[in-house]
Image (cartoon, protein in one colour):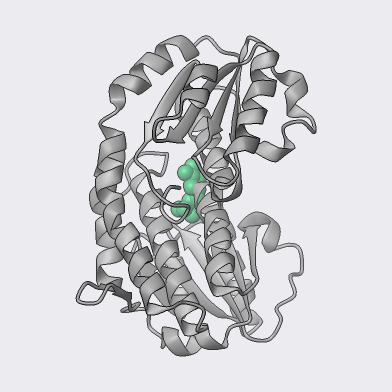
Length: 321
Ligand code: BG6
């Protein structure tokens, strides 16, 4: 379950990094990634549910580092919208089970159009794994819960690696930068462990939040998909109304809903967007909303405005999600 995440992330990355020089070398994919990633001009990522939210994080990572356009689609929409595949497109499918019908249909649609398909999956020889041209495995072990946890985190780590491998193939990454990102990835399992040990915080926060009518999860940039995923988890596990939203969109609608019965969960790491996140929280507080914020490091202003403040280990944009 969730407590296996540190091991799952470590095992997802291990086959693809060379610790003698902290470089990325994708292995066992089934095609020459250096060649393919060097040629591609557009990436499509298709998935459902939590897997779709990992795809959205991947979009930010790959575009930021490799500088090629990435388009994410919910598979059930993708398969019916007559998508256009420019030359040198690559379709990445993300599916823990490798059996989700809409994602399989999206893979078949891309293959019928002559597009190369790379599958990120947790089950070898599943339908999607078998039909893809290239394979990356979450190596997370069997995911038994309805809600994906260790597979989710392992997928994010694989997308970290993919963004580095693509950037490397495109000549957009120096060896120094690559080594720095690989070291950040290496540090992730221990950081996850630290968060998993904060369960007294979660128990305390949950005891006051169980009465709320609704939750609004807010995040920016790579944390926006994580806000979507957090809301999905609350729906799937606690059967409570929760919505994930881009924090910058709050004033265009959801703000009207905030009152003392609504809790706002804000992902607010100390990054270049922090001030904007803080002003979102001030707006929510002004309307009587309960505020749970998740940040990095000591942050008196965030702590003072929050009803609950969870401090995450310091990490950069690359691994904080
Ligand atoms: C849903 C699950 O049914 O399928 C989600 O409730 C999951 O947790 C989604 O993310 C996609 O599944 P898969 O196996 O394609 O990743």
